[in-house]
Image (cartoon, rainbow, N blue to C red; front, side, top):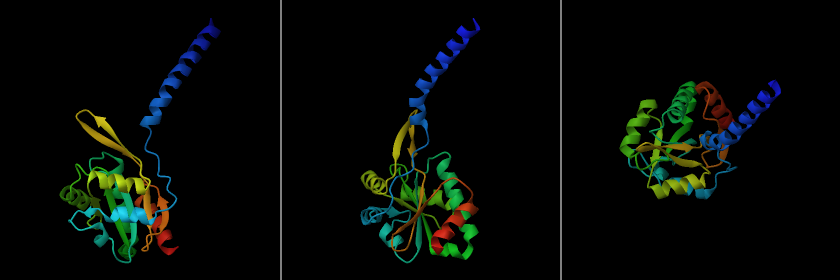
Length: 199
């Protein structure tokens, strides 16, 4: 009787596991981008966007600053605000070195993230954050060029986005220095950025 019960429990467990695996695959956080480099096409796609003040991204990103790029959306409930807060803390930890860096938030939700909305949202974290948006077609092109995964997830009468969370650190000439994790402390992110700037 004990053996039969044990086999029955084992069978049920295997059945539950087989049903849960496909669900967990879709529910798992977004995969990180696989792009090994950022090419000219990716930069040109980014340059077609506009910032929260109505200026072209090309004009906003001109100069000799390093660039830290993160993709997300303002209606995100957790990862995006946590990452933006981490970036803001990193800027504080960097002190005067932060003047060499331009942090950029690219929305994956242009229908809701208008320039005006981006301006209000990003100012809450740090006024040095540059927000970029565009048409749905432009955003899709940028996401593809940068190797960003994004998928709309319905939530009742609205939706959320499942998306990549990697940050890209690029040199002033547009070369990808490194990809950074979006989870951690502001101090750790500041240290990782400092290594990139000095490399």
